[in-house]
Length: 216
Image (cartoon, rainbow, N blue to C red; front, side):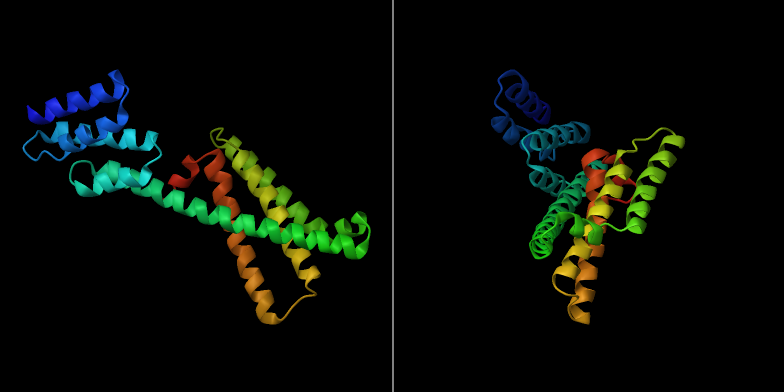
């Protein structure tokens, strides 16, 4: 009965008394009670992880499932995927933020040099990349709508992101005058990573369920 009593106390601290910080210790004691019923321990672990996630403590929730790995393997797998997604999200924001800064600086430099915004737009916006991005956005959106009516917005944002990345890539290349072959290769690699980051963010911010199929 000890694990059940600890679970009851934890639920009271959390839901009745409004003291979630105190509930954590009771949930951990219930989950870690090896003399307790496995179902009760698993329930305590599940509630502990839910509470941790509500507090923005995703890493602590994953650590709890790793302390008692046999209680809820499915919960551990879900939290591991969410932590992995959170880390990729941080990298994606960093890469896209860097590309955005480089793009703005490059476009500003070209505008100052040219003196006319229209001339710069003509050099940066090319019909073929624009049409390709529009086809990707529109075609993807139509396909998911036709196949079960899923959310088409990630494809729309992805098409927009690829179009903007093309503008950033071209503006930087023009602004630095082409650069050495090694520099061009490095910049191309960064832009490729940027495409993957844009695809990830388009799905993660709009329809995270799309990432499940990729194990993210």
